[in-house]
Image (tube, rainbow, N blue to C red; front, side, top):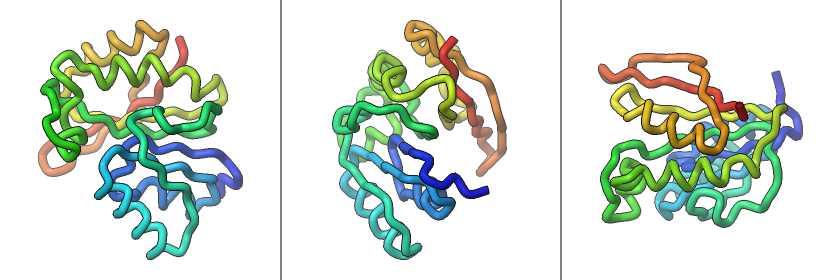
Length: 162
């Protein structure tokens, strides 16, 4: 089904695969990443697929205009270690999960009860710790789907205001 004119935000777009798919389905897409290489990949993939999307350099919501989105997809870094490079920011969320502290603090400004917010996490992340941080902002998780890739389970959660 085409999501015509639905607003779609991807935080941490990486290759832009998800954003391109959303745009192909008629969504008005804002793809963000902190890594210049990721932004380049997203732009290239959009071009190759002949679709239009907005591609923005942003650390979490830093450069994202205040608005609520119909869809938000978050592919977060989840290993508790301090990132030393921009590339490492794709994997490491800070020793004390600083990425999630910041994310969940800001996230409620960008969605409402009609929004669909999804987060992709791996089985080897510290899920309880991440959920605990989310709860401080009254955000709760519901598992939507799990799949196994390269011997590792990946889960997709829908996030709600509790």
